[in-house]
Amino acid sequence: MMVKLMMLSMDKLFHNLLLSLLNKKAILVCLLISLFAVSFNSSAAGVTPYTGKKLTQASELAQNDHLDKAIKVLTSYDPKADYDKAFVNRVLAIYYWQAEQPKSSITALKKAVGLNVLEPKVQWQANRMLGDILYSEQDFANAAKEYRNTLAVKYTPSGADKTQFKKDTNEVYFRLAAAYYQQQQWAQVRSSVIRYQAPDAKKRLQALRMQVIAEFRLKQWGNAEGTLTHLIRLEPNNKAWWQQQISTQLQQHKNQSALETYSLAKKHNLEFTANDYKSLSQLYAQNKIPERGARILEEMFQAYPESKTVTNQKTQAYYYQMAREWPQAIASWEALAKRDAQYYWPLTQLYIQQKDYNKANQVIDKAQPYAKKSEFGLAKIQLLYRLEKYNDALAEAKRLNEVQPSASAQTWIVFLNNKLQSQSQDELQGMSS
Image (tube, rainbow, N blue to C red; front, side, top):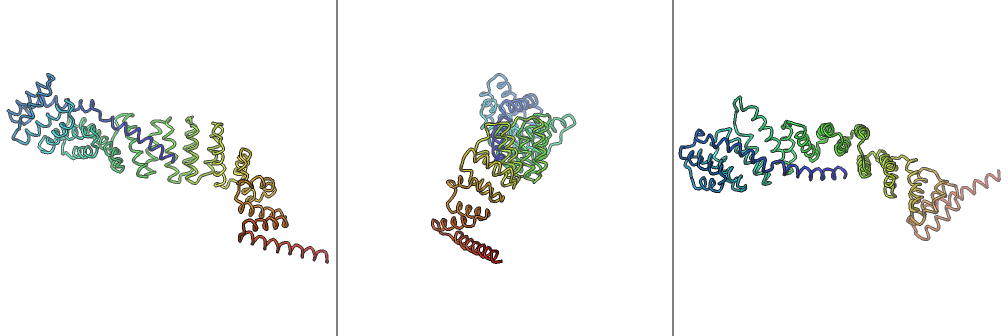
């Protein structure tokens, strides 16, 4: 349950982060760089002279803040050659974006890249632009498709462009992972993000967060453990990473590692809230280490005395009992019974189970109002029998059978009658001898 809540919280946080990843300002910078190149190289880009003239005319209008006129120049022109069509639509997409018409920009870019006639470098850039705009419009499926198309473009950069191309390709892998993330395609998220080489600590943190969520969704506990180790190094004061590290280790049955992680978290002086302690205790109990869960609750009681509620003490008592830590379980039920008389009943049962019949006899009558008649009666019979009060036990069995006839009560009656008869015979033989 704790892991689920943390994952939901992280998902919400990361959703907002990824939506802001490709903001309009970032895309506009990318597009303007492309526009700068188009404006000054249109005549040498392989377009026909007339197309070059139209592009220059539109560029001059755009630079003088007449975007609507620049768009009209290009939309009213229908070039014949596929290359000219692709080139014009690519430029038109930039103007549409500047004019805050993203849908028209997408349509123009799709025409440009769909013809597949641009130079590899330009084709690569156009595909990436299309992916970015689709992402900004939250069309994540098509954004992912265009990022894949970008990576599939056969472009070999020259020596001067190699460094920038490597950097840009690296960024596309991150954006592809982000697009998959928004679609909850976890296997694809992980396969994309692990190819990303973060240029700085901030970006590395973003990538690792995305990666660990994918690994949790895929239940790849071993991979998640490794990723969380990196996250803890980057953010040692983020207790969520420590808690999730414990969770992944418990999922792999690495109980000792989980305990060591918990100890390290405490040594880092992380401030655990009462809810953190409670969540951790539940996590240990769910992973069949209830004794550790009970002890963590004790730490919670010491750190936050107000958390020592009847409900939390009851949970601790159950954890000790599940762990077969009988002295601690008994002590917990004793403390609870002093606060609320209804807990004399589980305390009585535990005393009997642990053969502490004298103590059970001291409290069993206090438990009567809180137990079912049949269960209480059978427990009282057993207790009296263990105390060798056979007549009292037989009387109790008969009373129970009158109120609630049962095979169990009748069996006790037969057994106790036989016991008393045997006892009488033994006494008579002893006297005669």
